Amino acid sequence: MSVAARDRGDAPRLIAHRGASWHAPENTIAATRTALRQGADGIELDVRVTACGTPVICHDESPERTTIGSGRESLSVRTRAVRSSNLEELQRLDAGAWFDSRFANERIPTLEQALAKIPANRDLFLEWKGPPDGIETLVELLLRARRERLRVLAFDLDSLRAITTLDPERRIRAHWLLRTEDRPAIDDLRDAACNFRFCGIGLGVTEKLDDPVGLGPDSASWIRAILDLRLEIAAWTVDESTTARTLIHQGVTTITTNRVDVLSAELT
Image 1 (spheres, one colour):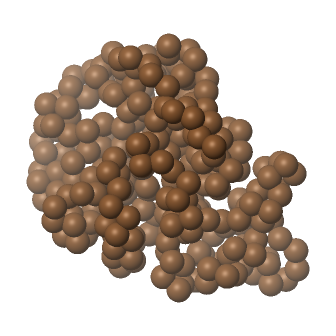
Image 2 (cartoon, one colour):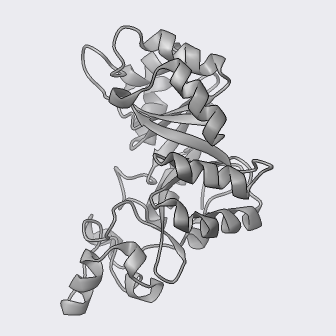
C-alpha cells in the first residue's frame, strides 16, 4: 500500500532513483513500493527492450550486476545483453537476493508490471537505455496507458526525436540527459531543443564540497538560461541536502535521489 506524496510546500518534487534504491534492490517492484511508502513524488526507472520486444526495467546492458542465479544457463542469461534475451529467461533470475536476502525472489519487472504499481498521481520518469530502433514499442505502450505526469529521458538525441515523431501531441514529455561536465552552450542547447523537440533537461550533477552542483561559478546563470528557454530541469542523482538546497535556490524544482526519506526530512 502506498501513502500520499508528502506536502512539502515550496520544496522540490522528490523522485526516487530506480525506486528507493538505498533501501531495496534497484528497479524492482520492492524498490517502487518502498519509495511510495516513503512519500516519493515520483519514480524513476530504466527501460530496455527484450529480444521478444517487451519493455523491461533494467539499468545495465546485461542483468549480471543486479541478479543472481544458479547453473550455466542462468550465467549465460545474466551476462548476455537484455535485448538478446527473452522475457521468460530474464524473469527466471533473482533480482533481489544480491541486495539482501529479504528481497529474494524479486524479479526483473516488465514496464507494464511496474506501471500497475505506480499511482497515476505520481510523476513517472523513464530513462530509455536502448537505441532508437526499439523505442516504438515503448511509446506505443505508454500511449495506451494514458498516463499524465510522464517523462521519458535519454542521452541519445535521435531517440528523443523518435519519441516526439511517434507522439506529435507530446503526451510524453521528452528530456535530454546531460552530465554537468558535458553541458553545451546555451545557444547550442536552444538549437538542440528545436531540432530534436525535447521539452526538458535531465541534469546529472557532481556533488563536491566546494561546488555542490558541479557546474562551477556560473551554475546559477546557466540554470536560469535553461529555465528562460522554458525547458524543465530535473536534477540527478542528488543525495546531499547541501546540493539540493543549492539547486532549489537556483530554480530547480525536481530532484531525483536515492534517499527520498532523508532529503524529505532535511528539506522540510
